[in-house]
Image (cartoon, rainbow, N blue to C red; front, top):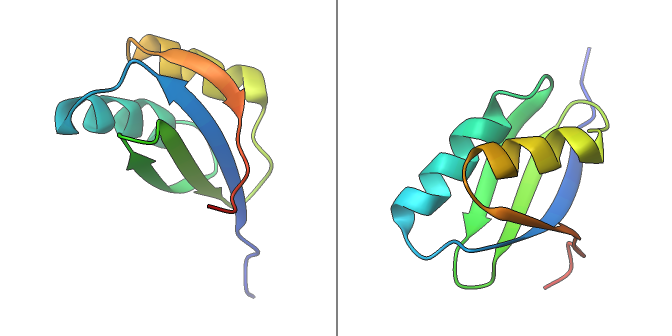
Length: 78
């Protein structure tokens, strides 16, 4: 059975380096259903692939736990 992956886009501020990206990736990856996280530090954009919808509050909490500011959802179109 194939699972449908859902992509979610978010804007995060305060990231400035690869370590920042790693911290955000680790926290978001720990959320249930998350399969992949891509962080674009210069753009402040995080794309999350999951096998289910994600609660925005859960993503906000993960970003804040990593030490950054959750700005909101972002378009997946560059």
